[in-house]
Length: 257
Image (cartoon, rainbow, N blue to C red; front, top):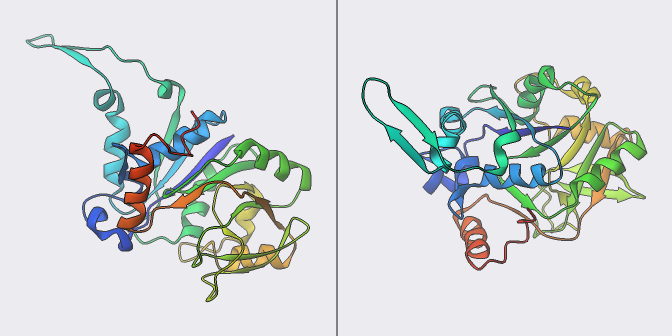
């Protein structure tokens, strides 16, 4: 199944890093957090990625264009007939990565709308370029296929400040962006969408987490796949350091590959 990942935001709360690179390229354990997200999907068998680029998107393009060069041991033959020999094999050799310029100021729903023409099948995977989890992604796909609604969001339980979900027997009945009180469940991304979600997207100024998801919830078309295990976003320098510490200690719950 194809995976759409939003990679275009400016990451203003992580300005120490994002002044020089987009947030998905901020490193955890020496690799961009985007790489960790993609490794998680690849572990579950999903290796066809559509990356929605925006702010400093050229950094992500350069990373994948030079992926072998950056991740391999190499031998260079210099002279009039130069030659490069790569010595290192890696698990990413069967990945397909589509890099889309979705605009520097496009909102999340607008970026998704621009990606939809590149989605081949009726259902696809979707997430943000700044969160890690050990959730069973294939279980969320099975859940999505069984209920038949347009959208499934992975519901997680971190500290407050994210879009709160009210859930009744597996259906999200209300979607509230940025609640004042600490929520029980929040939208953790790692979604499964049907392409019919395009009917709810209204242009580059469309914010996915507002009218589209709120409307889907009010119509009973937004389901929750609840995950009580590990989930962590990386919005701040402190959260980056938390993830770095887990990786350095060999205790990174999201490293399931």
